[in-house]
Image (cartoon, rainbow, N blue to C red; front, side):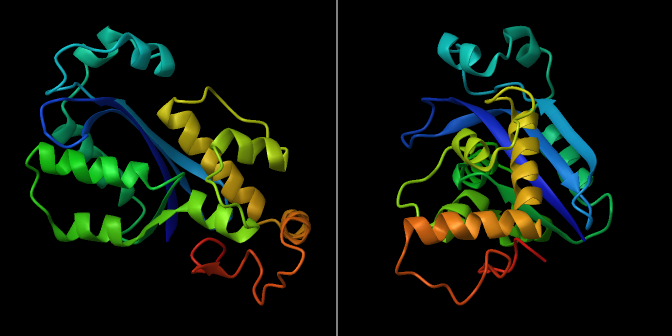
Length: 215
């Protein structure tokens, strides 16, 4: 079984009444049972519904218009991604920082008329919002940004924020950090300071229930 950490960059579209966005970049890293990165997946996605790219999205992500114009369509990238997820076998767990990525993926499958399959059901059934678990354990009422979580734990971020592969890789680094026994002791001390009356029966290694995170 492998663990996969994903991140998507997206661009708002007005083609639907709902507040939908098109995914314009996939990024993912694969981690083995020793918490080592063994592979990565990255691809731009050509927009089909966005007719005019917003300068502020391009500036935020540092994605160029030509990157998207020459990129494959969502259906092709998604198929490649699903095949990549299963390359080490049919079982995997998937993680993202916040639930926005799973929502955006679900929206894009709907917008691009991609029919549901057993493989897609598996992907969503094995998806964990790692931001929520991290925040909940430490007792934060507001969601921490990935950059804040990295700074708090002393992890040196790699790459640039709002780059899908870099954000996926940084989430994986945080996951690896939290699986280290000494690191968990440090996080437990933070929790005890933030929640002095809270004496958890479980440690950070028990749950996602927290159990999905530290196995």
